[in-house]
Image 1 (cartoon, one colour):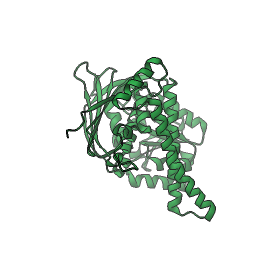
Image 2: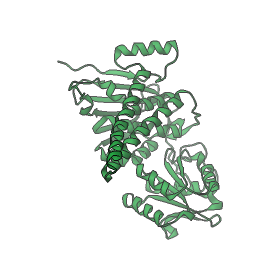
Image 3: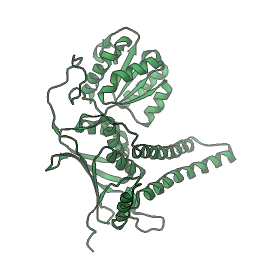
Image 4: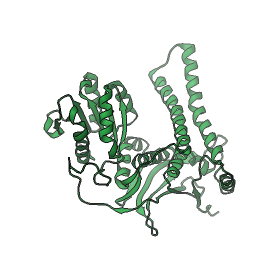
Length: 395
């Protein structure tokens, strides 16, 4: 029997409200994908019920015996976290679908951002034994940098849900009109076809995880064109996804960005070489957090803020950022332990200390501590330059 032909899926609005949208959703039933609301709510129910049921069983056992071992406690934490993540994803989907996202379009280096996300998620990809094959054309596009990072991060989440073996990834241009495209192909997990009754499940339903719904909604909010195809019904079938960016495609400039240039971080790819990179700021003092946010807001970074070393350690357990900016007053034994743990995994990981010493800028290679130091009064002028220099050196 010959395999089924490829079935393209063009991502619909996950939250259809109009008559026209309802008609489109009904038409989509004939070709496979379920009504978006039904698919989303059904998947949310499963992704909440499964981990919470397991967690409830553990809590019931704990209440009756008064004991739980380390492995059980770790499993309980993971189950609660899975349910929490499902809720967060649905909140993100609803927020974007409601149009409450304000985008700032700018020229962003697509390929560099892809590589940044892959480096950020490298540990998880390796743990799941996903091997990446990359062919990345250097392109820059007009998008919101933080949303692009979120889109690519969601793409990796989807791979972790659905892919096994190798993932082929390409950044290319369409023939005409010339639009940037992100194209990926992978083999679907064989376990995705097994159902409790022992039969085969519908492949498109297994691909429609919450990560996929968030990815599709993010793409729609960014104005991207999405095409997903599934080839065949055998366990080794291939899934292909193409994201097309309608924004202007530019040839990548070759002149490097000067550290501390008087031109500042203007709207260009060379003056925003770190767009999409992830930076964690550890600062107990509110004015330091505000100063860092103001200094870095034009660089297209993904920023997270915590107020203590303990919060930073918990944050890094979930996944490492590309760099850490920290308040020098927080140096302690626990902070040095966190540094040692991170550098055991990433020897050249970038740390930038904000000191109380005026406008100083001591790069890691000359500071003697192995960390770049920026004076508190020089955050606005020195911190962006320090990040560009240190991350460009190690990434």
